Image 1: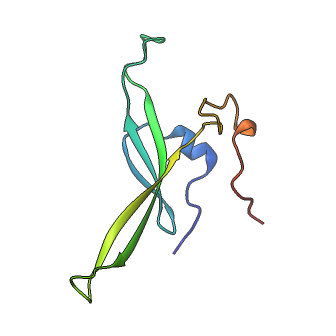
Image 2: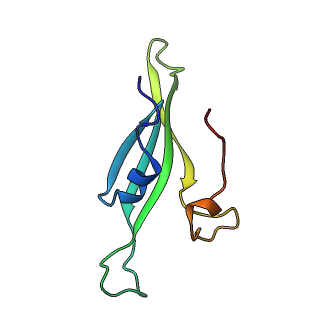
Length: 97
């Protein structure tokens, strides 16, 4: 299984609503938001968030598993909830070697 398919640049470029796999059960969810009142030229805003897909044993059917999704929150926000003005301001969850 290939991990880390989505680069930071690619995540910023994606505008079409849908689910985009990054590998290991991590998905980027892109949805359309409400119209932007500050910029009438843009029809709608785009919301992006991370989701983690996993499965758990199904208690009523011993050999079956139930799929679950866990939301990990929106991307491009500061801990206080406001948008980041640059990628350098975004919090770092972990660093890869």
